[in-house]
Structure formats: structure tokens, C-alpha cells
Image 1: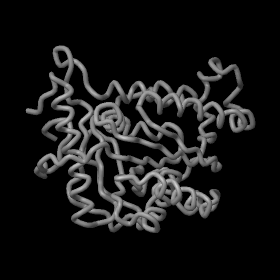
Image 2 (image 1 turned 180 degrees about the vertical axis):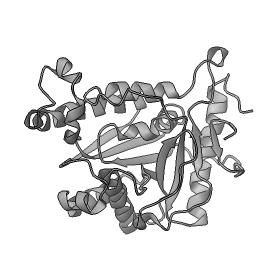
Image 3 (image 1 turned 120 degrees about the horizontal axis):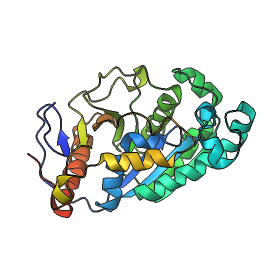
Image 4 (image 1 turned 90 degrees about the horizontal axis):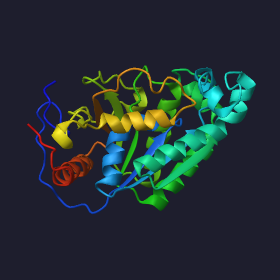
Length: 291
């Protein structure tokens, strides 16, 4: 895909004119500490350059990831890869790591819901059966009402997505429909190319028009040597108890689809958010340019 700049509309979508929105309010709802890596570049840009208010709600504490804590055992001086030890201590450890990540990103507040992270699966139903879904939905409703957010973000609920990721986005959509039906909810997926849009049935009404895209590889800074993948690496490195986070390449782009509501107004609102951010970055990063 041809690089057309840091913030753009994929597949020929034309950017709208900049309309001042002030300082936007953004809510991210995720299943585990470290899920924010999927939208880390956008969150950093919004919070640090656009002066957006960004809050993150984390449904579980990620204790089921204990198998990937081998190297962290030496840092935390605990045999975390033993099931009982990891599940006892990782909630505290992963919360600390999440707060460190939030500090880097410029997040205002992190809400921890403390639901059980029982195991890896791809089943929405299995995960919802483990969580106290009524309590999670009520808490999300309160957070949304009190926060008066302009946009909410969850991980894109594709068929191959982790069951916890699906469940977090499902409950976000459910809560938003009840208390803020006009608030745009975006589903994010990071990748090098446009991923297939194979959504779970509960998200089947999503806007299938071209997604909004944050290009992590857009160059800026001295001799245009910097790009936004640095931020993603910072965040991955913070989550030390999860040894997989820093392995492998960083995806080039963050793709954002409008999951709800499927209205022209909601689409315009998220387009303005991205257009305003692009204008701010053009001004704040003097070496930043879009070919």
C-alpha cells in the first residue's frame, strides 16, 4: 500500500477540512494490560500533541499470561511461570506495568475492573461466562457517562481474535448503546497491510467503508530518522512480565473501523478527530511531511 502520510483515509478516502474540536476525550476499553500496544501510536499522538484526555479501562489483570514470564522471574524474583504463583502475583505486577505504560502515553486515568483472566481462547461466550458481565457493563456505563467521551476504542472483534478482546469490545458496544448511543466506537487492528474484515456477528453492522489509518512509519525529526514505531516499542518494553511483547517486528499501521453507530454524523466526527490530529502534527513536528 502506497504511503500517503501519517494520518490518512485508506483506499482513496479524501481528508476533510480541519474543524476545531478542542481537546477530545478518548476512552479505550481492553481485556488485558498490554492491549494498548495495538493503538499506542495514536494514543501518544492524541494525548501528547493534541492534548486529548485519554482514559483506559482494563477488564482483567492478565494473569493467564504467566507462561510468558520466564525472563521476568529474574526481575521480580518470583517463579511466575508456576500457575499458582503467577496467578497470585501477576495481577499486582501487571497493574504496575500498565500504569507505567499509561504514564508514557499520557493517559489521565486507568480503570481496573479486576475480572478473571482464565485462559486463552477465541470464544466470546466462554469469556462472558467467566466474567461478571452485568457488573462490567454497569461499570462501563458509569465510566462513559461520567467521562463524556467523544470517541471510544476497542480491539477489532474478528473471528480469530482472543476471546477476551472480543468480550471487552462487545461490552463496550453494549454499554455505549445504552448510555451514549451517538458516541463513535472504533475497532482497531494493527498490521502492515489492510487486514480482512471478518467480524464477529455482534459487530456485523460496522461501517465497512475504508478505515482510518495511523501510519506508524511516517518519518519526522532530525534527518527524518524517527517514526512512531518507537512509541510502540517503549510500551512493549514496559510490559516486562510478558516476554513475547518485545519480540518480532512492529506493525506499520493502526487501522480503525467505525463499529457504531453507523451514521454519517459519527463518521464525520471520527474523520474530524483524525484530520485535526494531522494538522496538529504538521505544525508540531517540523520535519514531518506527507508525500
